[in-house]
Image (cartoon, rainbow, N blue to C red; front, side, top):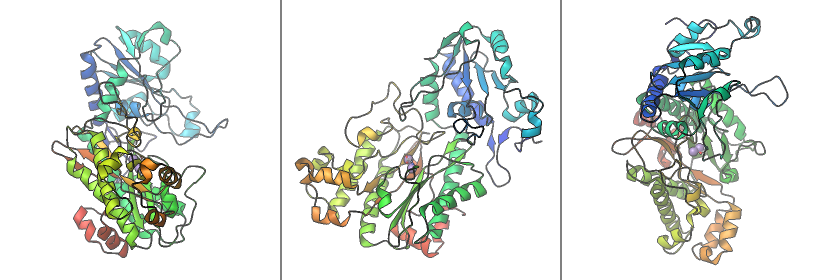
Length: 496
Ligand code: GLY
Ligand code: MN
Ligand code: MN
């Protein structure tokens, strides 16, 4: 198909050129169709109105962040440009994209102006107009109310940006119906979306494998971060990462949100330590979120192996038990139970594992949740919608981003971890209800150890859970891969 003038995107698909995945605009058309089908039973005469993301300047300057489209807008329209609106007529299913009208001089600075026809072909919507025609067109098609999006993001506590425009007070606006329906639809991935998820997870997996081999003692953590970003962009066309890269080595592996501006992956990786690298690429909005933990030397020490294999046992137990109908909270507890059993076998804990669970011992070692929904947002929406289990207040469980039952076509992360975090260990040792389960002299050996996390991106199928992540996971696989053996490539059926 002919490329749209002024862009490198061909009609009917989003892609970044040869070797990268072609994302068909039919993906977004199907999302709209699913939305319309749901809404027809609820609000037949309505028009869905969404406002896309805007360019975000660096404070008071005229420099902007690299634009990233708002996720609900991508889900409906796939549009990569800023400053758009989109409407969907619930009764007919017709879709309307409104794009900014740029002055002629735009062409001097930003390249050729794209015609409305070219936009229509590119995004495969029914109609395209300019944003300044929004009121005129809505006046023509409106028969009832406008459905705008307003609802809480239960991870951030922030609220989705509700569409607004100068003349909106002329319309009846309903901002309650749309949110729970569209957020819930986003939870279930279509075959089109699953293809994109597989792609972004595979390129992220390959980038992690590349770094497992290239990371060396005395490199700086940020150099590993830059290798990841470069790999995913250069080989996979992934312009964005899905979140700030966490490249914690040694003790830094126990800092759960390491990599932030105050700790920007700026330590040298010390020989003999573990690297805990949590990084995921983003492709046209779809997110990967993978953590690998490996010894920079290429060989696990006995203590590193103990903790790594404890976390791996926990991860594998969830793979074995997870299937539709199973509660995610139960999976969290299962992962905790296995971790505690393994730590007990390793001599770090003592006593009854059931009593340890009652005493919230697991949350000392894994304060975060087992994992979360994954999709257009790395912590994807739909976690605590009405009608689904509510958030627990127990340590550990309260950090779960959803307590839903698993259902076919959901994407999740499974990311158990074990960390030695001084303030949590100190608190537990000072609390008689918890300290009785700890073996202080053994625990002491692990002060400064850092942590292990094994994070896979998975799809729930009819019968169970399929791992989309393709990286070496056992101690043997990791050691073999780092030492230069390539057997794992055939086992995982991958090219890197
Ligand atoms: N990287 C964020 C997370 O694992 O949830
Ligand atoms: Mn992660
Ligand atoms: Mn995650």
